[in-house]
Image 1 (cartoon, rainbow over the protein chains, first blue to last red):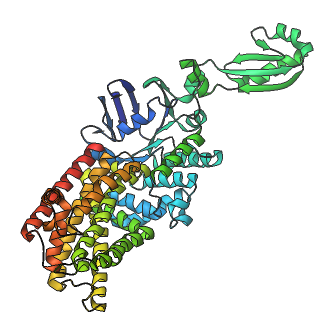
Image 2 (cartoon, each protein chain N blue to C red; image 1 turned 180 degrees about the vertical axis):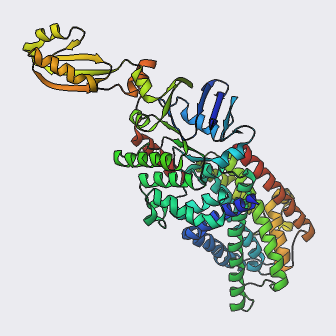
Image 3 (tube, rainbow over the protein chains, first blue to last red; image 1 turned 90 degrees about the vertical axis):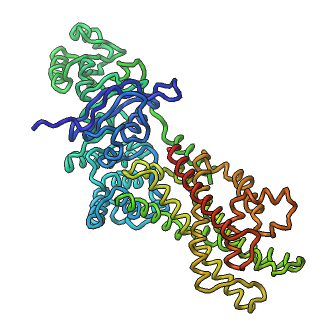
Length: 328
Length: 256
């Protein structure tokens, strides 16, 4: 069976106020059942791209098809086949979890006979069944996020967009959310496009990542291949100073840093044994041996000469809270 | 068919929120009662009219209740935007018009509930004082005539609220709207005084205020006395409501 890509993006561009090129002619395709990560620093154009794909804003130029519907010509059909979890909460916090899900099911035209079943189904998936009738206001940040993921699934979308699904969550809850995302892929074969600026998140979850910077895609590949492209792993041996001269003779290609031997190898896991044996044979005492695998952060650093700055969610939440307080 | 379901869904949410917000319910019922009992009976003691003052302002106070409720309902669009729930509605496979329609009907329903409650309360006061304190006409015909009129007035005012909300960025400017739009609209409407005794310059201003026609319409029905012909005030209210709903829908659509 030949299946078409579920999302096809061609030369998509968004210019704000005639001068800010938030998204600058990007192209990519996402296949069915794939988790595609959009990785980049804040303001790189990730959310703008998602907003265009889910038909919230119109592209300045270019086009995109989702499930073979054009986001420009058939926005309503596109909206029917996608599910969304936004970066900022979009729940009605005066309503109960169940009411929020019920409203969503109605808005997406889920038949009445199926509503109850699906609501229970998604609540179970995110382990919120026991809080179904609690007002959302009383939920923690992690619970709200899980409820939003559940809500995005009620209408059985073919494509799920997750915009920074774990922003501002504690590490434990983040791991939880990752588990749900992987479960969705495995059990429902849903195509997922997610944005993130957490490197390890993209690495752990995504089949392919596109690295975006200043509105342009600068690399698009499997995370492993991107990292392999950097030339492999590093083995770090801590040795005592008295062995340093000896080690310099034995490991001719290595770099030396204080009393550390740094060896560039293709696959550190396989080669570390050989390296250690070589050290033993030459009577070099190894105090500690470490392996460093390249991360996507190294990839980004290599491509742009910068690091992806991790935004502090705390500050963001604080600003938002203040805005709400002023509003009331 | 799905669009009707969508309108119903938006309306349903308004209803759930309304029934859960006891504070809003109680305060919006209490305010008109204060106006009627405290303001009404104090002024009544010192003015001479061919009708008692409390009866005269009762229709005006009902319109005031409709007005605050409906405009507030329209303004909640800003709230939805700040809460994020607006996004949930905007990306759903429904038209923008259904969102506006659901919001408008929701606002009109809450206004209607308050308006009906107020009429009921006025009737209780009327019966308790044997018509001394307040004397409104009320029988089945009047009742079935007044309900659709209240719905019509409310719909127009929700439309106004949605229009304002689409032009405002945050609720911070709500005070401005309150002081420079809602209060003048209420005071100039003839809710509290007969407009045909006014100096001519201010009388013309009251003719420009759409709320005037709503007040005069209810006054014609409830006390059978009015400064403006009932056909004229009904037509004015109808035109106001239709145009406000159209403008509201247009501005809302443009904004999102």
